[in-house]
Structure formats: C-alpha cells, structure tokens
Length: 84
Length: 312
Image 1 (cartoon, rainbow over the protein chains, first blue to last red):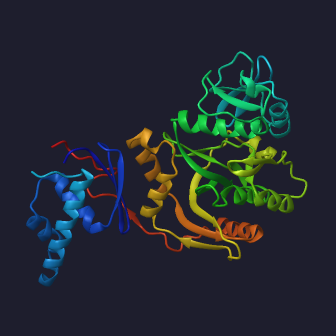
Image 2 (cartoon, rainbow over the protein chains, first blue to last red):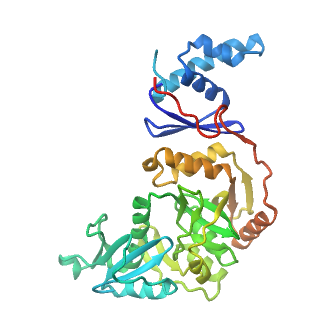
Image 3 (tube, rainbow over the protein chains, first blue to last red):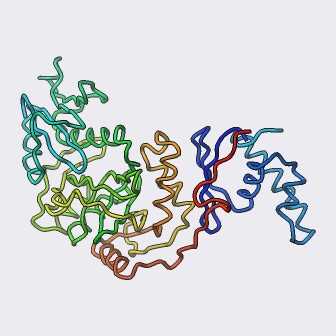
C-alpha cells in the first residue's frame, strides 16, 4: 500500500481517506473489504475473491472474481494499490 | 474608518477595516451596529481595506479594490459594489486562513444548542431559508460559512449580514416586514444583492457554540412541496467535503472532523418553494428529532477510531 488510509463506516457505505494523495473515496462494503485486506497484506485476485465469497454459494464465485478484478484495477488507477 | 479604521468583533474573529468610501461606512453603520468595537491597538485576525485604485479608474467608471494585509487578492469591482465586496472579501479571508476550523460553504442555524447545517452551491436557496428561519426564532450562526472546530467538533457562530440575491430580496421583505435590509446593489456577478441585518440576539450570543445535529441540503424548486428526504451518511460526507473550503488543507484532521460531524447528524435533502412551509418542516424536525432512516454506524473493526495502514 503506497500510503496511510483512514476509514469511517456507516451502514452500507464506507469512506476512506488516502493521506498520501488527499483523496477521499466512497466504497461499498465489498470494495472496502477488498481494500482492507490489501491494507493488511498483499493478496492475489484469487485470495481476495475467496475472502468475499467465503461461506456463500459457489455460483457466486465468477461474479465475485470479476468484481474483484475490476475493483483492483480501479484501485490501481486511483493510486491506492500497486502490484506486489 | 478613514485613517485608523474600525475593528469589529465578528464571531471568533476581529476584523479591522479601513475605508474612506461612504457606502462602506454606511453599510457598517447599518448592518454592524450591534457588533462590539474592539480596542484600536489590539490584535486583529484580518486587516482589510477598501479603497479606489490610484489610476484613472479612481475617477472614471470608478472602481474599488480590496486589500488584505496590504495585498490585493482580487481584481477591482465597480465602486457601487464596495460594501458587498467587503462581505465577499471577508468570506475569502475566513475560508483561506481560519484553519483551526473546518470551513464549510453552508448556512447554519440553531434551535437551542443543536445546529442544522445547510450546505449548497450558490443558488440552492440556503441563504433565503436561513434568513427565514432566523426570522422565526432560530438562532443565526452564519448564512455562508459554517465553522466546525477541529478540536471539539462544535460549531462556532459567525453571525453576519445575510446576503440575499435577486428574487429572495423581495421574498424576505415580505416574510419579515420591517426587516433592516441594506440597499440593493445591481449588476454584480451574482445579480442583485442586498444584505439583511443579523438578529441582535444572534450577534449577542456569538460566543455560544452549538452541536451539529442535522445536515440538510436545500434546493429551492418552484411549486414544490416542502419535503425532507433522508440521505445516507457516506454520500452526505462526500457532498459536504465538496463544499468545505479547507478540507484538503486540513488533511487527516479535516477528514476526522467531518467524519465526527457526520457521525452525530441525520442527513436530508430538502426541497421547498414556500418559505413558511419550509420553516414549519424545520420546526417539526426540531420538535420530534426525526430520524426515520438513521442507520447504525459502525467503525472499522479493530479500532475505536480510524484505522491507519502500516507503510509497506
């Protein structure tokens, strides 16, 4: 993770402040979970997907994988994550 | 005001003003008569001066310059706009230098100790609504700049003349018969502008902070019924941040101050067209502390406050 993140959560919305860029982002819970996972340690798309679908129906996995792939790409564009 | 100027205690600030322009002195005399005048030799937060330029525009199509600490941050305006220029310039001073507060482009009024913050872009109707509420018993804290103390989260009042524009000037004249309103200045970049004197009580109670309780995004819509629509806190956070002049300057402090404020507030969109109906909705809100969609907020697991990522 390039910089320090600061979080606030309300019901189904999460706001995160990136101290490195000064940007503030509004995330849905799934996206926040992905970013918080990456904040703790590097992870692959597969690992992030598994974390999202854990305990859920297996047919959700392809959708979750696509979501994670797209979301991580977005995070990269925003400068919030970088390849390990 | 010509040589040594006048130093006024305005909310948490002291502003020292010098000007030989008659309309400025008249505006101060009419609209700031309830404000404490501070010792000549004392500290002032802002030193401002309004004066005609020294070139030909002093005499021909006369203009006025705004000086702050000896510098001119703005281009000159027509001399007729001198008093509004003082108001706009003072807003700029506060927005750019008062960094012990999160400064939000929002009106704010209070009932008791609880404040309702009205953020919005120009033209949303917040000043008109603010003036209407102040005329019906709500304490005016500010019509333009909401000051959120970064240390305590409380709102510091900055009661000043309410800036009315275009149709709202007559709306308030009708709603508040006998109100003290300064001259209408036409052809400004905001159209026609006039200033409503702040209620004396609001000025007298300028040292009494209030707790933020509601954030209401007003929008005047001709013909609409007065209606509150609950809004989620996350989206409201971003909308308020967009209206905060120094959110970026304050960095993490700005984020934490705004987040704490959002924590304690119910957030709404508000449409209105009739000022009396609008005031009635706000009175009902204050009476019943409407919280129909108040979600239960949770903090990020593992901390009692913001999480902080370790550097990679």
